[in-house]
Image (cartoon, rainbow, N blue to C red):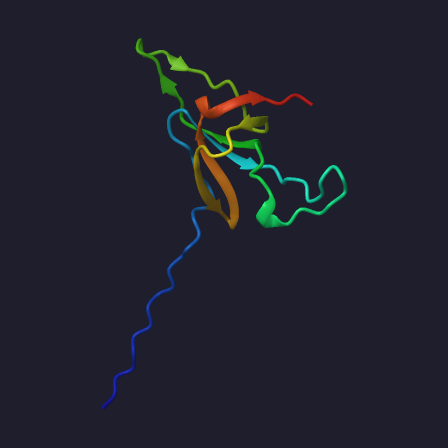
Length: 112
């Protein structure tokens, strides 16, 4: 008598919908880069560089200095920041790419 194969429960391959960074880490989402060059040529996805501009999505729990005083974050949620091209850890949240970086990896805050 043949037995029916057991079905395995589906594994959820997506990450959690909410992430609270720990310590001095910041969760950012890279801004979309332009599809067209300054000369009007369309750039394919394979030739695009990673954008260095990102929007701050969440802040970590903070850190403490040697004396135990709380270190305040320089950035706040919603800030547009300049980040290094290849730093941080890429994570997917609800199908969108985000980047988890240390606050020290943020090069500056962009003012518009």
